[in-house]
Amino acid sequence: MRFKELFQRNEETSASAAKERLKIILSHERTLRGQPEFLPRLQQDILDVVKRYVAVSNDQVRVQMQESDRLSILEINVTFPEKHLSS
Amino acid sequence: MMIDFDVGLRNLDLVMGCERRVVYDLVNVIQGEASLHQALIRDKRADDLFMLPASQTRDKDALTLEGVEQVIDALSLDFDYILCDSPAGIERGAQLAMYFADEAVLVTNPEVSSVRDTDRIIGLLQAKTRAAQNGGKIHEHLLLTRYNSQRVAEGEMLSLDDVQEILAVPLIGLIPESEAVLKASNKGIPVIHEEGTDAAIAYQDAVSRLLGETLPLRFAEPQKSGFFSRVFGGRK
Figure: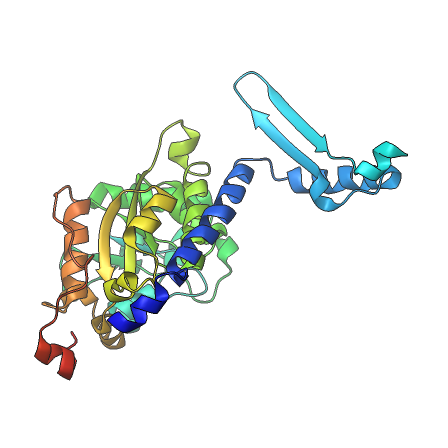
C-alpha cells in the first residue's frame, strides 16, 4: 500500500476530483436558487429574439432576477460576438 | 411516531418489519376512509413507537397539504416527535414531508450525486417550507451514511470535512459502512437494535445528539487493526 501511495502522491485522487466537480456545479446551481420558475423559459424566449438579429450562442445571453423587499431587478446580459461589432 | 411519505413506493413498513400488519395508510386517513387510530401500527420492539404507512396503490397527488397538516396536528397532540420519512427526489411527497418540519435530518452518502441532491433539498428547505415562508428557519442536520474511513484515507471517497465544507450543515451523525445494515434490513429489524455493531453505535450516537447531547465523533478515522485481524479480515 505504501509503495502504491508513492506513485499516487502527484496524481489527483478521485475524492479531490469529486470535491472540485461538486464545488463548481453547486456554485452554479446555487445562483439559480430562488429564481422564479419562468426564468429559464424567459431566457429561451429572449435568446430566440436576439438570435433573429445577431448570431449568439446560448451561453452569451444571461438572465438574472434579483429581488429585495421593495424592488425586483430583471437583468439581461447579452454578450455580442466580436465579429458583429467590427462589421 | 413515523410517517412514510413515499406514496406509491412504500418501504418503511418492510424495513421496520411490520409489512404484514399494514391495513390502512396515510392516504386512507387523509381521504377519511380510516381513522388515524385505525391506521397506526405499533412497533414490536419499542412500545412508544408507532408508524403510519404510505399508500402503495394511490397516486402521490392523493396527498393534500391540508390533509397532511390535519394528520400532523392530530398526531402532535399525542407524540413528542413526528418523523416524516421523505421519498427521494423533490416532488410532491418530498415537499409535503418537509413542509411542516421544525428540523431536518439530511441523509447523505459521500457520493457526488447524493451531495448534489442534498444541496438541492437544502435550497427547498430554505424556501418551500412553512417555517421559511413565515420568515423562520428549519434546523438542518447532516447524517452522513455509508462512510468508509479507510477509503477516505486512500483518497477514494469524499471525506466528512469535504462534505461539510461543501454543504455547510452541522453534523448529527456519521454512520460507517457496515454489513450489519443489509443484514438488519433483510430481517426487518432496524439496525439500531443490532447491538454492538458499528452502525448501531453510530445511529445511537446520532439519536442522542438529536435529543441534545454532545458526544465525541466516532468512526471518522480508520481503525488501526492488529496483525491478526488484518490477515484474517475480522469485519463487523
